[in-house]
Length: 355
Image 1 (spheres, rainbow, N blue to C red):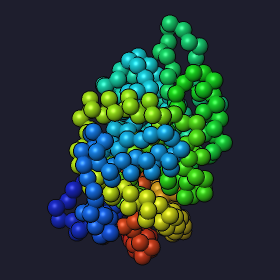
Image 2 (tube, rainbow, N blue to C red; image 1 turned 30 degrees about the vertical axis):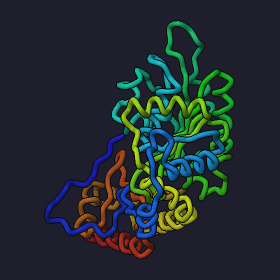
Image 3 (cartoon, rainbow, N blue to C red; image 1 turned 60 degrees about the vertical axis):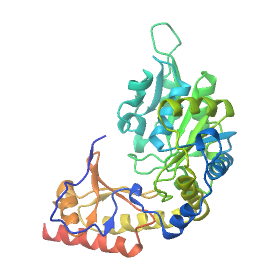
Image 4 (cartoon, one colour; image 1 turned 45 degrees about the vertical axis):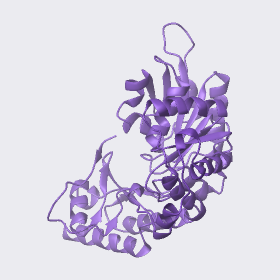
């Protein structure tokens, strides 16, 4: 995956409409207040009541025995695979998965694992593709230890893995003695869009996590969940990776606030994404992928405007986006309003007209 952020221009106007990513969200005033009032303690020795409450809530939300608070979603993925695998093992994941394209080769560098990329439309491989990629357990090939899915599939367009596909992949993995890992960076976007509870979506997956610094709007953090024994081992890797955070209740309070106030409102982001896609699709020459959640991918080349030029021209109007895998990605979130969506569509229309 090639990710091309817009070049920094010191003369560009301030960003007023930030569609770069849902990681661009800022803590709300109410969230900051919750952080200021948080009870804290030493998180490493289990003495931070706010961190403990967050982990209990996420474990319950995902239907798991235990959970651990991590600084980032990437660290959740890395620590989980370090527990599941041994050096020389193989992980199976979609070719555009975050663990392949956006984690700096951490799984190879830290664990000595290789990842087999599986092909498939919209960021997802089918159960049949997964089954066909399995090989007999012989001394000549690496042990296939883990299968990983990304819910939602970012580069696929924020697409949602169906419950039926997830269940079938779990069944295949278990029949072949493999562990299952769900990168749930935007899992709650999927649950809000489908109405399927997170625990049902993550059922059968040995490890799963949710990110709080994307659509949920917290400034930092992800929570990884699994069995009690699994989380004990994750803690060992958290220590090795330098992740103990001491009085982390200040950050955990933001995540609890997000669970209480920012989950249901993800539907607003999905509605804004659909409105953006509709507006762009009405402009001749712009090809738009119909969004399932809060990500909108489009190509303006058919309108005579290369993607990089469109991103640069929009930046002149204070609208921030980026190229991703040859397309423009727009990401809606709690700091993006419906009025901003209409303004963005208007700017795109003007740029196309000028071309």
